[in-house]
Image (cartoon, rainbow, N blue to C red; front, side):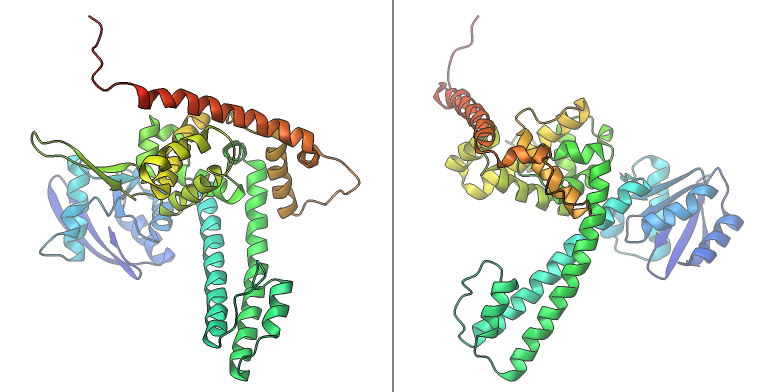
Length: 398
């Protein structure tokens, strides 16, 4: 099935012969009627990964033996075809699947799909808020307003500062409209984050991912939703490649292999979150900061951040596969993370009661945990320093 927004072109391949089944409107009742009339429980349905592919697969699964979603980036026979129609595209999908050369896409379960949608909604709301903030900044800049002395332009202090700036009446009205839109977006953002927090509190995988330094609720939920079942990755390199953090390689004939930039394939949203987490981990004491500093000294900060994100994925695979937390986790800081999630989920703030997160407010305990991480960082730096001092041409023992 070559599916589009309004219709799907259907072609059947049976014993090497193609048969056109026509176009089916992309409506639930019409798809159900088509499945009841034309499909059997022995059929396999192949579709390309599009925005509505998951819904089509869910609708057709009860009527067929299997529904396969193809990776459109890897089906090059369709992308580079000289003669291209919907019927031909559907026929190519059928032939590739019949010969065993169809690159398939893993279909997440409904819970994982819901997590992905929630993370996407939060990202969209944040981008809308940033866009409105930039519009306010451009208005102020156009009328020679000085830089805002407050950290948050749309906070209480920032709004008082904006009200004192000299701008024309129409621009003042535009700023007020943008501020009202930001208030609406922040209200929606709190609701979405509350739903994500509820999911994070009940999911042991998300809680385990949060033991990594630099990883908060949003990053942990986004990465967990992107990975799904970690058992589908036989080794950490497969997970790194799925997230597009592996370097591209070009090699032909007897020539050497050339390694370039990362491939940026797979889940781009999760990859961006991991890079942001890597920047945060580079500021936290521990072996990951030593790793970042070692790479940054040779290749620069940006390459080091991407390399640290790749290291996070490698560690993450071992953690989820072996069902163990990060070995250098700081318990007080982790309890504070969990308490922040509880508050976002709407749990009551118990001011008169000291919970597990209170230890983070005790300077002695916080310093002791930090010292343990700093000691691990020094040990890692001392261990890797031997790699640079090792001679390249050392003879191997007989």
